[in-house]
Every structure is written in structure tokens, then in C-alpha cells.
Amino acid sequence: MFGEIIMDNTYSIQVNNVTKVYKLYDKPLDRLKEALSVTRRSCHREYYALNGVSFDVKKGETVGLIGVNGAGKSTMLKIITGVLTPSSGSVEINGRVSALLELGAGFNNEYTGLENIYLNGTMMGYSRAEVERRLDDILSFADIGDFIHQPVKTYSSGMFVRLAFAVAINIDPEILIVDEALSVGDVFFQAKCYRKFEEFKEQGKTILFVSHSLSSINKYCDRVILLNKGQKEAEGSAPEMIDLFKKILVNQNVEPEEENDADILKDESEESTDSWQSKLALNPVQNSYGDGRAEIVDFALIDNKGRITNTIEKGSRFKIKIRVRFTEHIEEPIFAFTIVDLQGTDVSGTNTMYEDINVGSVEKGDVKTVTFEQRMDMQGGDYLLSLGCTGYSDGEFTVYHRLYEVCSINVVSDKNTVGFYDMNSKIEVE
Image (cartoon, rainbow, N blue to C red; front, top):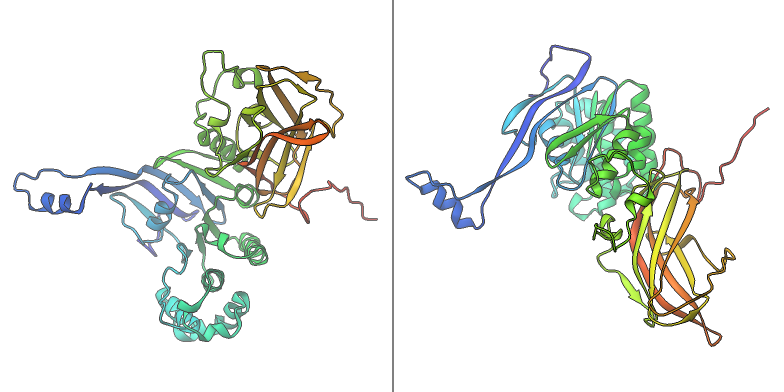
């Protein structure tokens, strides 16, 4: 499969109708029963990790593979790199491939880092002398010091990925294939890796990579292929595919004729019994507390196209909606949201008191829907959303109901600045 000269030299990778089927058995004994069955009785069910997938990657392109977990992304990369064999279909490669898939794949845990560099170089078809010519570049990029002389079984996951990536990109590949391994490295190492991506692009090399970072996909990819349930859903520009991916995440990939807040945010009394939050990726370990005089019964994150989604594009306007039901009379309830980073640091947020909104009093059984609309100027990345209904009872601050870190917010950006927030600077150089 590797090293073949394909007919059209404008392509680095051609994937032709690739299918990968696994046999799934309910228990190990079923496998034996099937193997020994005289009547060829089937004791398994088939699972299609990939089903008839075809696409091409041109020389010099940076192409991303995206999709929900289980869509077939990693299986496809393993087939392209020869780790797996397809059940049917074919893959043709034109150029020397370097792959960084699962953490430490191709490494021998008992060997030192240095010995693994030579081992990987040999596996790639290089002589010892050729590896030695690249050794300084590999060691400099990995930057793991004297640990290079220690067995890799003693490495942290961060050190593992630094060395693996350093080897992968410094053996002069024509095609670089990367799975989600970069998420293990620290932010500075990731920045160094992406600078290398830029160098590769400038040199006209081909990059195919899987990432859950939609910001990285949006920034670096010339084209994106979207996989869904083992099939190619679509391919196109990064913004188009990210937009479609957002719909798949909430099972909204069938485009309605017309969509707006009124359509999506139906009242519970109407035909649709689906809650808003059912369309979001929620935190499975939500922290909910309060004295019970109010209950947040539903909430939504709405992007600039009126869709309920966890993914918001940087620079776009979006809404946070909260629906609250009251069980007692309350004077001047306060509705609030807070966005925190993954370490729990407050990044942004506001409430109706800060914004001088006069809510007035509410009675038992009242339901209030509050909409916060704002521009997303936070940096690309992952955050968590907290919601609250609070107020003052007999002069004391009181939490009626609070949902802490209830769902994620993924901000997609093709330009990040320093810190949490983009000040949208305008620069003039004279």
C-alpha cells in the first residue's frame, strides 16, 4: 500500500470506497461456537466502523477529519497509515508518510528515548547515518533533556508526545498524519507544533489530521471532511463543515426551511416536548443547589444562526436563555450567568442587577424566560457555563437556584490573542 505511485501525481492520498467491518460477539464463547459450527451459524453482529468512504487529498493540502466520537476518524487514519487493513476498498499513497497516532505507538517501552528514535527511523526506511543527521533537530524539538537516555516507560504522557512528535516531523516526511495526540502537550509545545504545521504548509507538504479543536481545524485546514456514523457526511471549507458538525452534535443535521428563535425555542405547552437543554452537551455531574423558591427548568445556548449548540464562533453574537419557574412570591429576583475556564476561573458573566434591569416581583407559579445577548470575544477554547437565580430576602443575599458548570461552551476561533479576552485592537504602523 505504501510507496505506490498512483496515476494522478497531483494527489498525495486517495481513499477509494473504504469499508471496515468488525464482528461483535456478546460473549467470548460465541466466537468459538461460530468457528466450530458445521452449519456456519453466525453468532456475531456486524459493526461498520467505516462504510464506503472515499476522498482525495491533494499535494500541499492541509485536510482535517472531524466527527463525533465513533464517527470513524481514527480508524480511517489507521487504515491510511497501514496499521489496519480495510475490509474492502483501497488506499493509495504518493509520498513518504510520517504518522503520529496513538500516544507512543511504535515505541518500545523498554528502550531509551534515543534508542526509540533510531528504531522509528529504521521503521521509516532510514539508515542509522540518515537518522544521525537529523538527531540534533529531533532532540532540540523534543526538549526533554537527559530523559532522552532513560527508558520511555518512565516518561510522562507529555514527554512521550514531545518525543513522538519530534521524531514524526523531523524525518522529512512528504505527508504528515496526526491524530488527537497534540492535546497531551502543554500550551507552549502545542504552539511550537502548530508553527511547524505552518512551515510544512509553506514547503508544500501534505497534512492530514484529526482534532477535536474546531479552532485548529478552522485555522489550519484548507478543506475538511466530516464523518458521521462511519460514512462521509460531507466535505468542504472549514467554516461550512464546522457549521454542519454543530448540527450533527444536536441531531439537527436536517436543514429546516426557516429557522429562528421562535421556531427553536418552543414553549413547553406546544407540540414539541423536547427541552432546550436536551440539544446541548451537558455536564454529567452538575452541581445544583438553592433554597427551592425558584427552579431553573430549562436553558439554551443559541448561536448567530438561531441554533441551540455548545459551539459558538468567536466574534459572533450569541444568546443565553434561561427559563425559571417560581414556587413563592419573590421581590426582584436576579438572573445571572457566569462563564469559567476548565480550571474554574471566572472569565466573564453578568446578571440583571449589574445590567440595571428591573425585574419586579414574581408570584408562585410564574415562569420567566430571560435572554442574555452578547458578542463572543473570548479566546478560542473550552469553557463551562453556570446559571443562577438569586436575590435578597430580608436583606440577606439568597440563592434560589443555581446550576454550576452545567454545560460546556466551545469557542471556535481562527485568531487568538493573549489571555482570556480579545480587545479587538486596531493596529497602525507608520
